[in-house]
Length: 238
Image 1 (cartoon, helix red, strand yellow):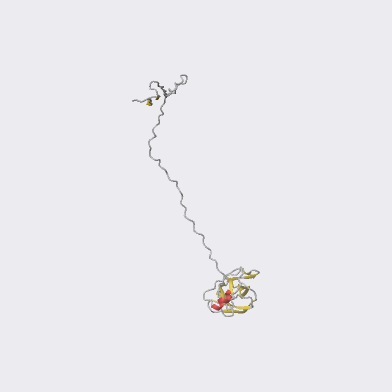
Image 2 (cartoon, helix red, strand yellow):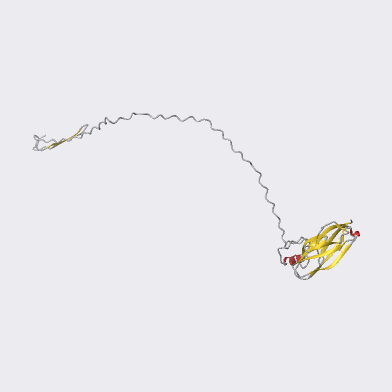
């Protein structure tokens, strides 16, 4: 290579470092700059610090799965389901008996109803009049018919019949019939007065005799000949 001036640059990579060589104008005068990077040696271990020995952790093999334990199911007592409670049948005091004429039923439904009223136990008259209770007794007291309710002895004074009438607060009257079921005797009492009250307890009686022994029936009849209530009893000789 010729010329007054030369410029050469050499870059050399070695295994352990870097050598950089520069040449100037005068090939005879060369300044070489060399830089070498040498990796720092690793620090020597401290002689006073003992090196822990290398230990290997032994891992035990997991136990082989054995047969599953037999699980006994708990014993549960199966109880029978309880019977549902019986539903009480509510009787509406406004229930109209079968066979009631339409006009009588309309008059009946127009009547007021108290907490003490029950449904009709017999027919309904044209004014709506009806009876919701009838009972017998050998005596009569403040609570109505009391004492023996059947098998009346002929030496007793009488048989009493009590009945509760519900109507439209106008004066009315009913008839009480005492009928021996053999058909050989009928006793009639007309004109039993029912005052102008919503409900009224009335009473009639039959004086007993020896010839009255047998089965009897007492009936309460309205003015328009509707049977409002009836009940039976027996008279016996001592």
